[in-house]
Amino acid sequence: MISLLIAIPLLLAFVSVMWKRISKSLFFLAAIVNLIILLASWFPNGVEIHAMGNWKPPFGINLVLDNASFYAVLVVNAFFFLVSLMPKFVESYGTSLMLLMAAANGFILTGDLFNSFVFMEIMTITAVTIASKRDNFYNAFKYLILGGIAGSIYLLATIFAYTATGSLNMAHVSMAAISASSLIAITTLYTIGLGVEAKLFPLNGWVSGVYGGNDLAPVILGTSVSFAALYMVGRLFGTVFHGNGAEVLYTLALITIVAGEVAALRQQNILKAFAYSSVAQAGVVVAMISKGTAKSMGLAYFHLTNDAVAKFVIFLVAGFLVYNYKNLNGVFKKHKILGASFSMATFSLIGFPLFAGFQSKLRMIMALFSMKDFLFPAVMLLATLIEVGYVVRWNVRLWFEEETQEKAETPVVASTIALILAILLVAVFLKPEIFLNGAMKMGNALADSKDYIQGVLSVVKGGM
Amino acid sequence: MVYAISIILIGIGIYGLMTQKNLFKHLISLSIIDTAVNIFIIATGYVEGGKAPIYTKSLPNFAIGKFVDPLPQALVLTAIVIGVGTLAVGASLLVRIREKHSSIDVENMKGVEE
Image (tube, rainbow over all chains, first blue to last red; front, side, top):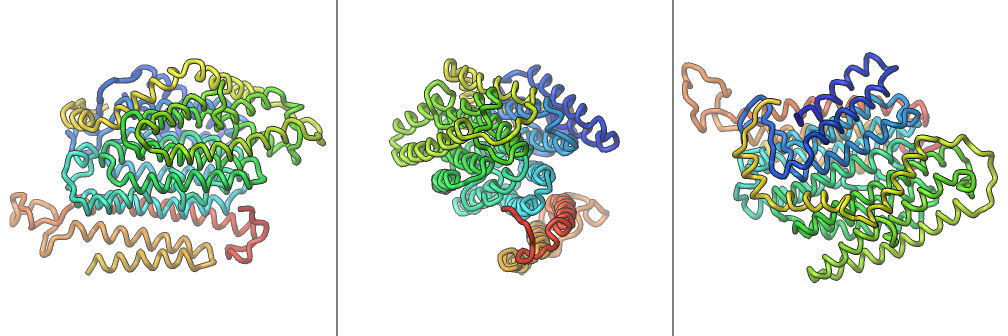
C-alpha cells in the first residue's frame, strides 16, 4: 500500500502535464488520497517493508514504514493537503507540487541509500521550479547550484558507504562494522550533502533568497521539505550510523542558531526575516537530534512539528501581505483574523506560555539539563531573547502603525486555515499529547536501530 | 590514478564555482563535479583485468576478481540522467535570467534582489 504514496502523485503529475487546466484538482485529489492511505495504516508500531519487485532485502530497493517514517510522511502530506485547499495559491504549479510530494514521500520512505539520493535530487529540481515563481530566477538558480553540489556530495558519501560495507540497504549498512576512518569520511560527506536542505550554517545562503522571493516557496519548502530533510538527518545519524559524526552536526547547529537569529533580527523584509528564523529553528532541531537518545530525538521532532505549523501560518499571512500591500504598516487593522493567527503563531515561535512552542522548548531545556549539557540551553535562551526582539517589532509594526493603503480582498480559505492552525497551536499547549505522542514514537523508532535492522531484514512482504 | 583524476576534477569544479562571474560557467562547473563523482564511482567497481559482468562460456560461474562490479555502473547511469535533468533546469533558468536581468554575468545584472 505505501508505494501508492509515491505512485499516485507521480502518476497524476504526468497526467496533469496533458491537462494543465485541471492540475489543481488533480493535486487536491493526490493529496486527499494520500491522506486516506495514511489514515488507513495508522502508526504501524513495528517495521513494515515493501520490497520492490519482490527482491528480498538487502537486495533490491525496499520502502520502510515504521513509526518514524509514518509520522514524517503524515506531517509532510498534511501540509501538502493544506496547500491544495488553496487553488489561488497553487496557480499553475500543480504539476511541480505533485512531483515534490512524490519525491518527499519517497525520500522519507525509502530504505536504500542510493534511492534516497535520487529522490533528493528530484526534490531539489522541483523545489527550484517552485522557487522560481514570480520571476525569482536568480535565487532559484543559486539554489539549484548549491543543491546540485550537495547532491554530488551525498552521492559520494553513498558510494563511500557502499565500498566500506558492500551494501546500499540502510539496515544492512547499519549492521555492518565500518572502520573508524571510513565512518569519519562518510558522516562528514553526509553532513555536507544534507546540510543544504537541512539549512545548516555555511550551506544555507540560498534560504533568504528563495523563501523571500515569492509566496508559495516558503509555505511548502519551509514546512514539508524541511521536515523531510530533517527526518533524514535523524534516520542517517540516529539509526544508520548510531550517532557517529554527531559532534560536527552539534557544533554546526549551534552556529546555525546564533547566525540565523542575528540575521533575522537585522532583516527588513518580513518573509526574509522569518526565513532566517526558520534556519535558526532547523539548527535547534539538528542540535537536538545530534544528542542521539530516543528522548532527545522525539523532542526534536515535537519542536519541529510545532515550528512547522507556526511557520506555515506565518509564511501564509506574510506572503499574502507582501504581495497585496506596498507598505505593511498597520495592515492588520484591516485583516483582524489574519493578524490574530499571525500573532499567535509568532508567539508560539518564541515559546510564550499558552502556545505550543512553550511546551517543546521547556521540555528540550529540561532534557538537556538532565544530560548535563549547559551550552545548548544557553544558546537556545539567547536565541529566544533575539526572537522576542524581532517578533515584537513585527507585531507592533503590523498592528499599530499608521495605515496608508486601501484594503485588499481578504482571502477567505487562507485566513480560515491560518486561524484553525493557530488554534491548533493553543490546543497543543493545553494537550501536548496531540503531537508529542507521535513525535516520541518517532524518536524511539529512530534510536532503536536493532528493531529497524531486524524488521527490514526478516519481514518480507513483496510487491505492492 | 583514476581516483586522482576525479579528485583533480572536483577541485577544478569548485575553483570554477568560486572564481567565475558568468553564471553559465557555474553550471559548467557543477557539471564537471558531477562527472568527477561519476568517474570516481566507476573506478571503485573496477577490477584489474576484469571482464564485463555477463555469464559466458569462458566465465560460466560467478568468480570474484574476474568480473568488474556491475552495481556502480548502474548507479552511474542513473546519476548521469539526474545530472542532465539538473543541467536542463539550470539552462532554462539562465535563459529567463538573461531576459529579466539583461545579462548572465553577475557584475552586469540589473535589478537583482538577493
